[in-house]
Image (cartoon, rainbow, N blue to C red; front, side, top):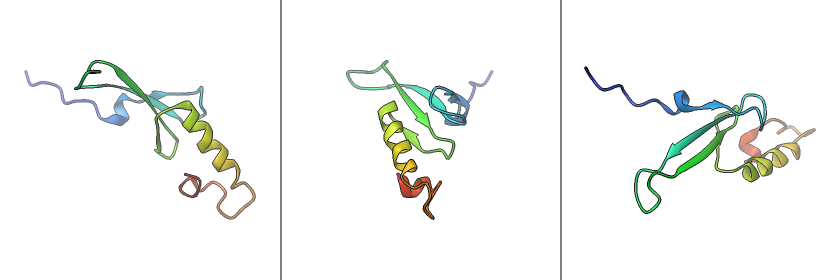
Length: 80
């Protein structure tokens, strides 16, 4: 039997309700170097932006909040 194809990033992502509706998280195992075998956790916004920490997510959400009431409101490319 043929080996199964590796799962795509979207298939590896799980819901992350602790950071908000529509957010997902993914754990990726490091493949090389001294830390091979360790896992890194990433979060993805509903629009698909990738974040490496909850602190980074907090800064992103704060930046989005500064756009409320402006013509850029909701434009995550402007915020981040």
